[in-house]
Image 1 (cartoon, rainbow, N blue to C red):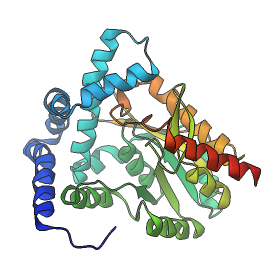
Image 2: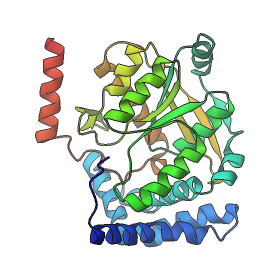
Image 3: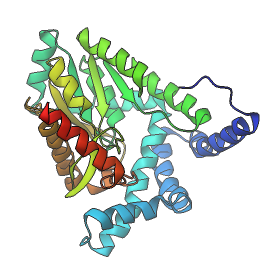
Image 4: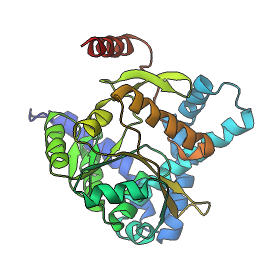
Length: 312
């Protein structure tokens, strides 16, 4: 991050906007946890989403990749998706209660044996996940299983809010590696020493290549698969699935992605996430501009870089 002085007007604007972003979270903290989480979900779906345009973005993304989805389902998701997002935010800022609620979540799946073997051998492990259900619930549950994991994250653009966001994220697990050159160097050192890492790979990645996601090109980062290959780390798709009661979770640990090449492995991660989303459409963050640069200059650049690498 830059150390250049920020003009006072920009700092004031940043603070005001950040405080406005945090206000609903602070308001919900007055409620007991069992009411706080659903109330924040309702508030986000019914008040914040229409004002911020999140519901329109859900509709636009669905129209882009699933144009034949029935209108009734589109309208349901326009409410259900922000509801899940609001619950995630309230949970993140309810550290003690959230950890107590989720640390003993059911952990299951065909990948458990593989990660236990890697741990016994002192090998690094990369859990790859997305903005689906609650990746933070998965973090807490896997820590309870003995996998002390670092997290690679993208900072928020609002500095005032980002300070509180990173503090809340850091309270769940350490170390944390901020996106950028310095964070990447720290993360590589962590993996080289046999560390465990969690990475979300379903954001629009400006340094990625256009790969398929729901039948449309989406810029996808190859770095996660490249790290897995470089450090002989199992690349393990892991999902924190929200239960029907809206408060609890089950953690699915899938079979590690078969080592091959970064493109094939990253496409498989996309495919596995898509499968999970299709099973539980309301648990993925359809608010993201996931396909924003799937075509155009950034996608063309990514395709050229991929072609050059394959030629080498």
